[in-house]
Length: 57
Image (cartoon, rainbow, N blue to C red; front, side, top):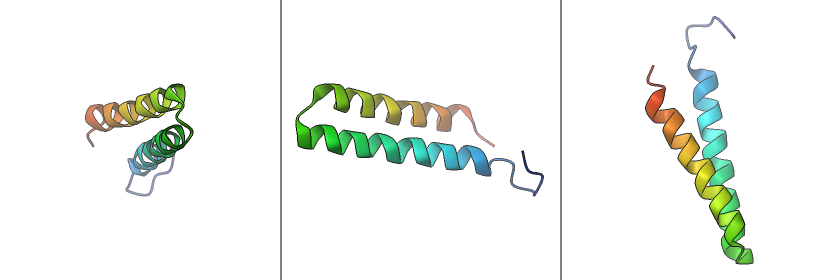
C-alpha cells in the first residue's frame, strides 16, 4: 500500500478494472449468444457496484 495521499487509488482502479472486464464479458456473451458468459459478466458488474457502494472514502 502506498502512502501518497491517495489511499483509495487502488480500490478505484480495481473497481474500474472489474467493471470493464464485466462489460467486456457481457458484450462477448451477447455476440456469442452464450448465457453463461452474460451471467458471469453481470455478476462481475454487480460485484464492482457493491464494492463501490460499500467502500466510500
